[in-house]
Figure 1 (cartoon, rainbow, N blue to C red):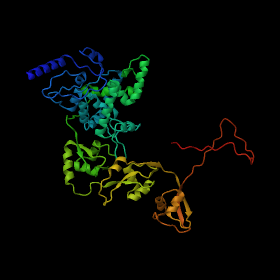
Figure 2 (figure 1 turned 30 degrees about the vertical axis):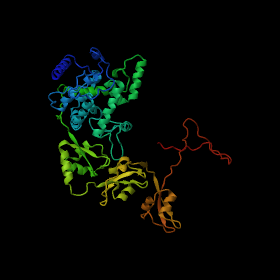
Figure 3 (figure 1 turned 45 degrees about the horizontal axis):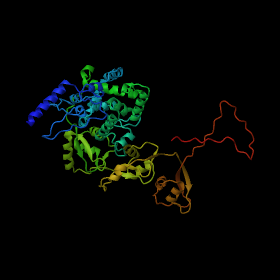
Figure 4 (figure 1 turned 60 degrees about the horizontal axis):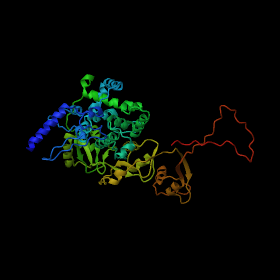
Length: 511
């Protein structure tokens, strides 16, 4: 009897679904015609709730209905079909959308490049969206943000395929240090972006407004809404006064959605992306060079970096990056080859903490590298000093086998200071003069004095010996130029009791 009642309830539920289409996001008029209608949701629908076997059937809530929890009998033939089936945002049709469509259609090579790049990441994003009950249009947002380039960096320093600013990234637990930048991490940045978008949807109750806030900031969107409310104007996305970038943001996403929905209409060719995970996660329990990890996995180094773009240096430090991503079929290859590897060390790089403030040339000599290689590996620009306490990636001595400690990996930073213009000076050493006394007198490090004079840091100088030191060049104070609209002051005899009324103006350095 219980099975009969359950079957009858299921039949009634399916009949109701077939006769009454679900309202789209923000369509309150469609909701108004439903029995027991609720206003548009102010938070994302929760994950599906499954009743235990034998439990009585209950009516689905509006949030559960919006979650589209009915499972298709046949899986989608490819990932594009799966994405189309999950569309749930309100459509936007405007001249700006058509303008963006034309922009993309006129650049078929660009569409091909970014859709081909997306094949590595789309499956994971779609899985996360479905797990959270969020519309699949959001899987297309990295097309707008970064063209699915996880290494993209904007002029405003936003980074990664979701384009997180440094501060917002820290708000969503995306670690940014010398060794890694989780704003570029495939898993971490996707988790943070969807968390952020869910919070914005909770605030505004509309996906178009949530997207505007993702681009422009929730404070700006809230103020724009409040302004229109004071003026008695509408508060939808299209009603608000906003910068051009934000005004075009949702139309761009709608244009991409339209092209993905009907590629033939736009003469666009989408690459085949299988409805299958592209990558798998592998645990790393020891420090290992990125080049060796890619070799053991049987993948090109560029492909390895595309899946692990958060890595800033040529070595994977297990204490900070305990997992890496590898193509699905290569994950087991890596594990097998790692276990059998016996050709030498896993990591040829380690971390060195700089004891004193020094130039890149001095640091390079200390660790046995060329200055060019030290700058390249550690991203040190020219004319910059390395401040004491900074960390550098340097060659690992054969005697050092221990992995880099976790406190160094988690907190290591590279601090730089502008290099002062220095002038070479030769002095005569006094009695009992040494490298240390000269360094104290001129406020430089003993390593610098030793390098300038090609002696050891503990060396002593003979009385009267010539010692080379470099001292900062002091800039001469600038004085006012003669005014163009008044005559120059006459030269008069200077009275002994008076000083010049015109004081020199010292030019301040810009911060």
